[in-house]
Every structure is written in structure tokens, then in C-alpha cells.
Amino acid sequence: MLLKKKGFPAEDELVLCTVSNIHFHSVFAKLDEYENKTGLIHISEISPGRIRNIRDYVVEAKKIVTKVLRVDKKSGHIDLSLRRVNDNQKRLKINEIKQEQKSEKIIEQVAKNNNLDPKQLYIELTEKIFKKYDDLTNCFKDVVKKETVFEKLEVNKDIADQLTEIIKVRFKEEDVVIGGLLKVRSYETDGVEIVKKALQDLEKLSKSISLTYAGGGSYKIEVTTKKYKEAEKILDKAVKKINTVQETGVLEAQFVRKE
Image 1: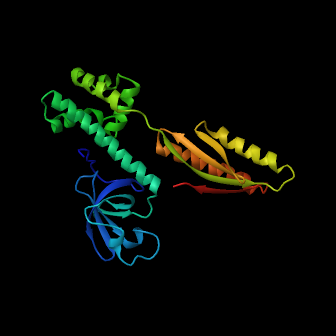
Image 2 (image 1 turned 90 degrees about the vertical axis):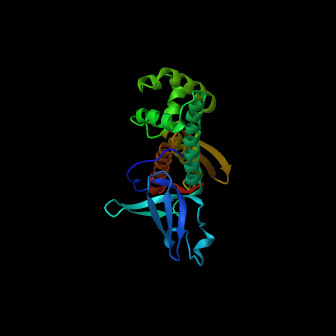
Image 3 (image 1 turned 135 degrees about the horizontal axis):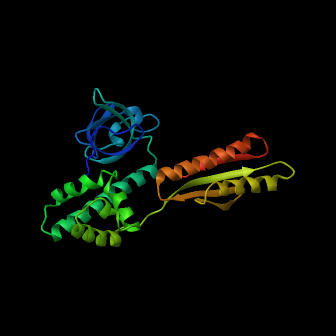
């Protein structure tokens, strides 16, 4: 992977790491996306519950997705957590990395077609692209939507045209879907109408929300967007909304997040 971010990661950021050293009570892991940065995972942040052998959970040289807990820029110390990353977050992060690698391969192909050094072309392009975008993937996804992206970034027209042609073939926008199971019931005389209105109010929060009856007073709630953070915000808003109604005492609600 050619992308190397400078500086330090932000707290709560998900980062791809490579396990470098395993000790009795801690693990050291190199941050693949950051230049010369290594983080520490304390045994308490490896997995919930008691751990008898730390090597049952981590293996040297293995790729893992961790969450940044704390960053001390003065000492260069970075605390990481493995147990605070759920399966959905891990899957999305790995997909993000794969998308960036796919973007880099496109540049390599264009470089090869023009007898150019791939790394040099990458540097030349990212010097312009990274002024506006955090990575190649988001830039290339914008190229699919509007062909003027490279023109505004002042990328060489011939190279831009070749990149655009390949990007349109290999890139398609993927939806992010998160959600869970919502169980609601009301013991009021007009309980059916109360539940119905509560669910309708949830759907009105956003067009990205969909509700499907799952039987036994349970409903499958899903939020579908293009960006994970946006989906998280909408789902959080929906849960808070139903909890607000529950606090009035007219209905009971329980939400279980699907990982």
C-alpha cells in the first residue's frame, strides 16, 4: 500500500495494523497507514473476559483492525484497542483499505501503459489530489459522478482521461447498511396506534431508514447510506427517538444492534 499518512492518528480512529511483538501483558503493532508509527495494545484491550494466553488472540505479522484510544504526541505513545472494534467496523475498514489498494492499482496500470515509474506518478497525482481529498478512493468515486474532478485538480489531461476511463469501469458506489432488531410493545388501550405512530416517526427521520416486520412485535431496522459515519448518526438519532417515546411510559422498546 503506497498511502502513508503523516503525523498521528486521531482518537477513536480505526487503523489497520501489523502485529510486530507479543509480550505477556501487551502487544505492539505497526500502523500500516502511518509512517513509522507503532501502537501498544494492553492485554485488557485484546478481548473481553480473562485471557490465559495472549497468543490465542494475536499472531505476529498478522493484520488486525484496532481503535485508537489515546495519543501522546510528545512521547509518541499510541494506545490501541482490539476488543472495541466490532465485526461490522472491521469489515468496513478492510473494505476501505482494499478500495484504496484498487485505486493505487489503477495508477500503476496507467503508469505501465505510459512507460512511467508507478511510484513517481503516484506522488505527482497525490500531491494534487490530497489537497482536496483524504485518499484516492473518495477522489475516484467523485470522478464517477463528475468528469471535471481531474480538470479542477489540474491533472495532466492525457493522464486524467486514461484514469477516468479505467475508474468508470472499476468503480461503482457501494452502499453502507447498518441496523438491528427493534422490539416495541404498548399496554395502552390504543397501544396498536401508539406503536404504529412511533414507527412512522422513525421512518420520517430519514429516507435512509427502512423498517420491516420480523414477527413477535419485532422490527428489522436498517439504515442505508454511502458513508458509514452518516449511517451511524442516523441510526443513533432513530434509537434516541424511540427511547424518548419510551420515557413517556406509553410503550416499551428494546433495540439490539446487529454486528
